[in-house]
Image 1: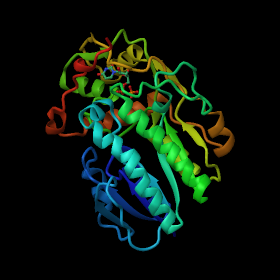
Image 2 (image 1 turned 90 degrees about the horizontal axis):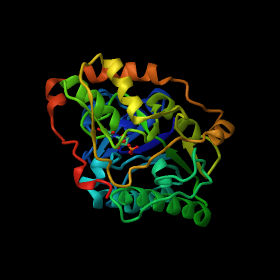
Image 3 (image 1 turned 135 degrees about the horizontal axis):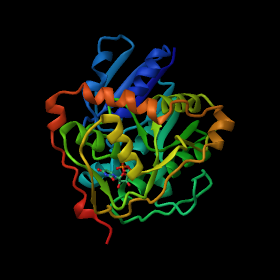
Length: 328
Ligand code: UDP
């Protein structure tokens, strides 16, 4: 049985990873500063002996006693609205935080997997995006704090591999959805479902012709699990190539929820990528992985989860207002 440190453990992806590693018989050391994570996501694990939780910000020195075999670094705000609210923490967790965790991995002779992102491709000029594409990122735009921190994270992780011989894995995660997303985190799927549940109009930014490709969380977790145990130190895209425009997506959510609300159009946030779709040839070749859950299946499960939330969750306003950041 191996011992695995998961940072960002109380977040959407972190908590699903905790579940998967526990299920596979590993010991999980979970860490989160709970700025954007939600401890409720881990509630069901606290009674287990093979689970420990540390309330800690990994941008500060990280101490874990005992052996560690693997580290998965998933701590970071991950929605545009969060990194606009807390830009410095966003920069720190993927730069200073990554450095701390690389140091810990080296000290423990552990393998580290870092969560990178399709945002390293910025507003991409190559479509679909393959790992060899270097990206089109505005370093000083509102998304720069996330995009550049994640790019630095990749560079630092690779340097520990080449210079110290550390075992590493880098996953570039494309838009992922599923139960435990924060209803009010500003991302498009919880935004639309939340609006439908509250009886509000659905806010499409721009003309809705921008595209995204949505991957169900179980598929993503499977890809990450395989990547951790593969011997491949270079970035691998994990995502679902099934691409859709945001306007069509809004219409899908209207059908799914049966709401009689309409679509309204708001300004497009600055630097909002116009297209995004992963090329997953590498994941197929190296991991024998591809997504299995269709959007219609995944959305059904996700909608059931959101419907089960309380009125309080539904109306807790963490505004969804991008107007300050509109594309000029
Ligand atoms: N979006 C939208 N309405 C919303 C929230 C988001 O039209 O209420 C759009 C957003 O402008 C972007 C896409 O949906 O084009 C995906 O946004 P999200 O914040 O989910 O993630 P991103 O992929 O941009 O990081």
